[in-house]
Image 1 (cartoon, rainbow, N blue to C red):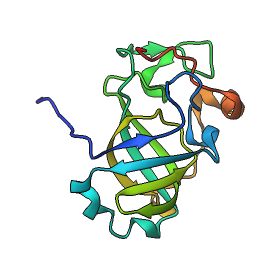
Image 2 (spheres, helix red, strand yellow; image 1 turned 180 degrees about the horizontal axis):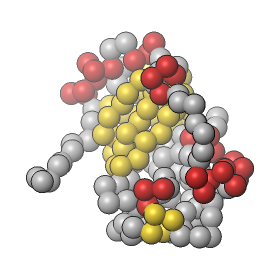
Image 3 (spheres, one colour; image 1 turned 180 degrees about the vertical axis):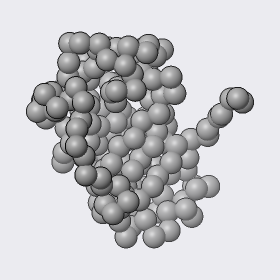
Image 4 (spheres, rainbow, N blue to C red; image 1 turned 120 degrees about the vertical axis):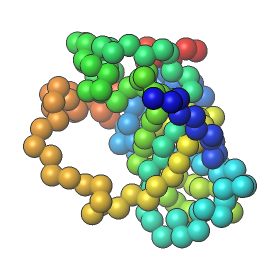
Length: 162
């Protein structure tokens, strides 16, 4: 199969200047402000985005270490397969976060509930629509006994190159 390449459409700005100490999910970053700078050549694509309270940011984990297929995630001391966790070191270092959209001024989106390091390259934006995105879930794997740690868990630097 051919290699796939993406070009960033913008950059994400946050108060987190390094991975260490960054919340590990948007729910852990509740109430924290950030901004998304969409490059001017893509600004026209923001038409009607202000009608959504939440958006999905798709981005590149640009500071991630090379991926291993089994790793110890932030909220556990046991190794799990990389596809059974949401850490940044992955075969394709793609991240997703559902954030609250506060307002848009030209090509700048003001957001809240951010869990992303400042300077992260933005690959895409999609509207969050509960009827499309929420599913009834019967099980959440190894996280069932760990998810209570979310509000206090922060990046400890184990997956980054800096």
